Image 1 (spheres, rainbow, N blue to C red):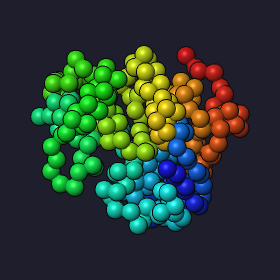
Image 2: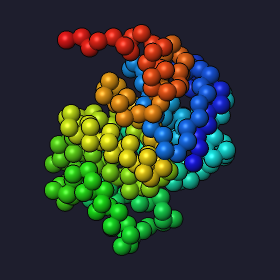
Image 3: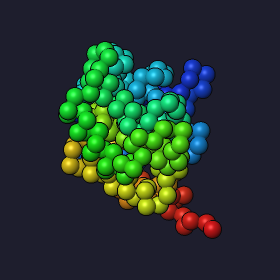
Length: 238
């Protein structure tokens, strides 16, 4: 799979946020999306999903414009985890994760053996086995976050986009998640795009950075983006 963005301007009719975006992502890559609050990171993600129309330019998935791809077809290609979530509290952890399989069925679906095996594996990988029958309202913020990430993983889409996936996670779980994302990219040829304010740690697991600054997006290798932006090289202030 390949994602190409051609001279895209994103934002809203009277409020452009990022201009002239040009980038290319291919399978096996992990890309860290960075930028201050309000700079357009979530809008950029929603534009890739065609939830917010581009102001100009185009986004191509396997050389096909997203403008010509139906929403369910986009969902088959891209799994997404947003930072703001709707919580169906009457669901258990396992119920929520199982919803990730819906893109593989045209209408109402009953999980088959393959679905159940995949769900079991993801639950185990994310350390949720103990909580699989726990109602969402009784989960900690961290485990709820992991449950939504698990739902995206069982979707088995070629690309996974995550908006602040490590929010509410402690340091060890952050590292576990970053390692998992990198493993998915390198061993399963997934394309991973994720945003994070914890970029000093996140960059260690990333191949490239997409950095929004002054209404422009810089895109390139981690070291190149870091070296070209002095503010990213400043020591942490305590």
